[in-house]
Amino acid sequence: MPPISSKRIELSGATGTGIGSSYGHGHSQGHLLRNSGISGKTAKWRRLYLKVPKRRLVDYVTVCILKMANDIMPIIASFDEVRFEAASLLSQVFEKQNRIQDAKPILKKAIETSQQSPFWHCRLIFQLAQLYAYEREMNVACVMLSQGADYAGLNGAEYTKILFLLSKGMLLLIDKKLQEVHAVLSQAGGLIEAMVSQHQLQKESLKVYFLVLQVCHYLMAGQVKSVKPALKQLQQSIQAITSLQTDDDLIHPSNPADLFQWLPKEHMCVLVYLVTVMHSLQAGYMDKAQKYTDKALMQIEKLKILDSHPLLSSFQLMLLEHIIMCRLIMGNKTLAIQEIFQVCHVCQQQPRLFQAHGAQIHTLLGLYAMSMNCMDAAEAQFKTALQKSSETELWTFINLNLAIVYLRTNRQRDLLALIDKVEPERLQTCSHSMKASAYYVKGLQAFFQAKYHDAKRYLRETLKMANAEDLNRLTSCSLVLLGNIFLSLGNNQEALNMVTPAMQLAGKIPDVHVQLWASSLLKDLYRLCGNPQGEAEGYRLHESFSQSLLKDHFQSSQQSEHKLIQWTEGPCPFHVISTSVGGSELL
Image 1 (cartoon, rainbow, N blue to C red):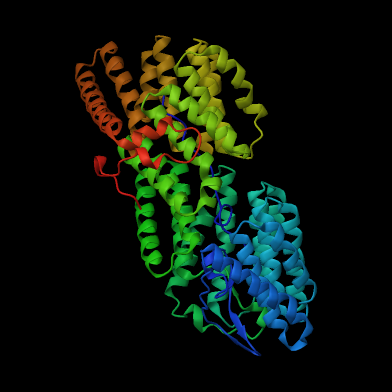
Image 2: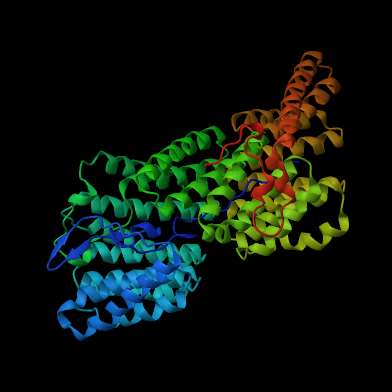
């Protein structure tokens, strides 16, 4: 049985990135918002690339200097902006050193005294909310962002008010508070429509931010069909932005509190590619997912040459995580394991990413091990991923695949201990597609127990849910399993009615595992129906898929990266992986 493809959705900024940063100050920190530097009374949109030194001694000196500035400047009233900038930079240094508790009081103190400096007050609120978000204190972060929105509104900064609201919506989405997300997005959407801006780029960028959140809202709910209008609108909005000749650096808002930018145009393009890939994977359009992944990764490589922004690494990881699942579905395990190793290498460059993506990496290794029929390794990887994750959706996804491992290895006792956790009616999930997948696993369990009536009931529920949201891969899996059930019951014609469309749909995805399964059934069905021509064609297809998968299986098993399936604890064992084997290259 093929593994279930992951429906995990991540927002940019959810892992390893933040909510607020500046155009120049902290540009290298990897945050979602940027603002201009301010010099005296004149606001200038410029990039002041501050690279925080990495050496410990220089870090220590940097902290000392900034602390002195932060402590001394309150005495000199005319140096308020310098003091706020020192507080901002010092908190960034502490954040980089993972000294979050040292950064918070500095920002809180600066916020208390910065109300007469709208730009700095807003910026400092963004930074503090970001720190709370890093520590998963979403409620406190959302309170900070609400305060920021109120303050921006009182100061006539409508653009920044909407940025605060959208950032709050993003955190609520990450925290799975979908009802509150709907209310915040509705408010922000109305403000965007009514907004009158002297700079079209500002308004269009807010539209993109809003639509990205709206699309992710749908995808997190597994509503692949319902999301299509919003996704189309998002793609049109990014085209409108790229057609604008306005340069980011040439925007001069009249209100200092509006001197912020969510993302540069180039980063927005990558993000739109990413959510398109997410949708394509869930809908079962593997070719489309590969096409946009290639475009996005190429764009990221170009951008990294100019500025190795940490946010680009987060985008890169999410793209790789999705394309790896596409490779496994399409039967290309060799590329999949090489790309899993690439994910590890990208995380090595920023240790925080390993912490954020560790559970996903072990989940991918579990899926890869399943596809290689290494069931013990798959179980170990899934259990490691469960230990590293507290996300309900990822837990559910892992447990569904773990249930398939137990079914395939006939481990009834382990399955019975797990099955209550994936009971469709009890699932603690907001995802339509995840619940449909749970019905499929129940149908699979009933099939293995020869409880064909129960199996058909579960699978028809899966089909109803899958058809409602165009979940093509789940539809093809359910149809071919129903065909197998009807074959077991001796109803050959009904089996043929199920397997034939399953084969056609699997070919469009393409899902080579379902094609192999369906072609095996077709050759038997045509033989039983007395159709030698159909039997010969079924045999030819089955032989073709078998040989392709066997060849890839052998190639993948020879890759040095294949050893990763034995890694379940400690840092990634880079030392045992030879990058020269199989032509694997690191990013």
